[in-house]
Amino acid sequence: MTTSDKAPLETEARVVLGHFDALAYAQTCTHGAYHVERQKMGFLRE
Image (cartoon, rainbow, N blue to C red; front, side):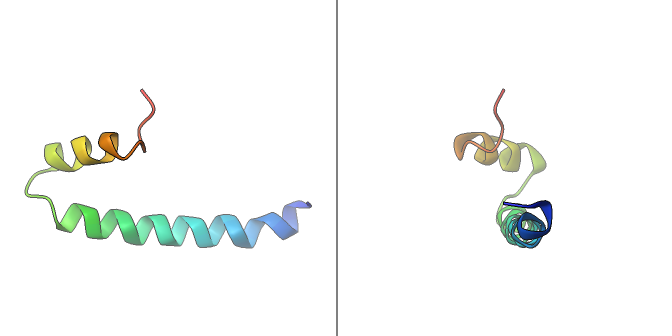
């Protein structure tokens, strides 16, 4: 798979994740709660 083949998929993934992040953030009351939800879903690997 070449870089040119991969780039559109990566861009699309970023758009989808960005949209999901915006929805998730809008559904939480505080940034702290949003951070915890992200950890629960495994987005943060710390």
